[in-house]
Length: 379
Image 1 (tube, rainbow, N blue to C red):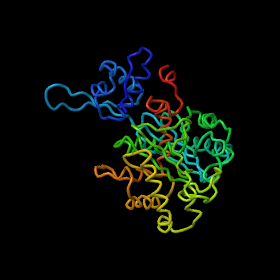
Image 2 (cartoon, rainbow, N blue to C red):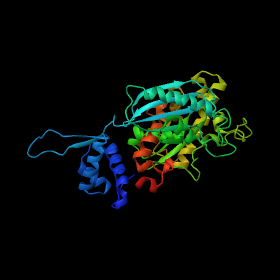
Image 3 (cartoon, helix red, strand yellow):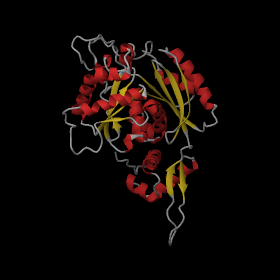
Image 4 (cartoon, helix red, strand yellow):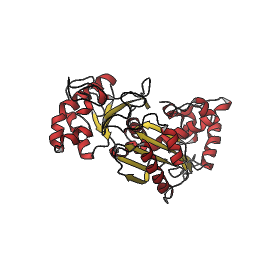
């Protein structure tokens, strides 16, 4: 997606974020290249770059001359110019990490708290934040991002059943997070956060249209189109786990029967109690049908498989793609396989949660995801 600056007088903060995002995506790069890519003058970009250097967010490196004249300095993100807290709450526990601007997890802590209530969770989060703030690797903190199971604000489905948490309805999660961390707070469902982590630090640097299939306690997913999450009217698009699969099948906490995640999820795997290879063979028809459904609905360049499941389980599920038959994705001119394992399965949601804060504060590209209005961006 093209990032474009604005010539409006009130747009200077917006342009700072545009320039910073362009450097993150294109670096090492030059002022001239950034100016051309975002549609601003070199003078405007140079002024912004000077401000970003003073804030410690970017680094400018002068290359040694190879001939006549002085070569332009190159610009890159300063990975230690700022940090964010990424927090992931699941029915299985809570993990928090200190993440730098490059997306590296520099310190982390995990607590096994089963099905934590909001009071329990934010008490634990508060303690974890104190520990991470005391880390010698902790620099300037920009904000905190929290990923947790969705969907949100659906009376019959939000925080219901074994695949989510109970007691979280009508809770001001964002305010609780701000109080627990003392930082600007951002929240997102975990499948969208994982997709964001992949977009910023993984395969998303190579492809712009892909579906992230989030294999966790439940099953969800999200489509990335031109670098942006397809969110739906109420922000819950991608709940593939609640597609009816088996007529009159297992009852689902959502109130329906035979939902896909009752058969294809970490919860389903643990309930069956089978060895990994045996269970993968058993669910092969469900997995392949899910892949073909996603392909025919969204026409992605690839489907990225990640989530909280153990890496061997994710990798064995991915091998089932070898048995896929026809869909609109069965093309001879493909540059990526139909199913790809995520670049960092275990930490994608955690890194994505941290990115909520980093790019919610610094980048207009993700502003709409975090309920940041254009007024907030430019003022």
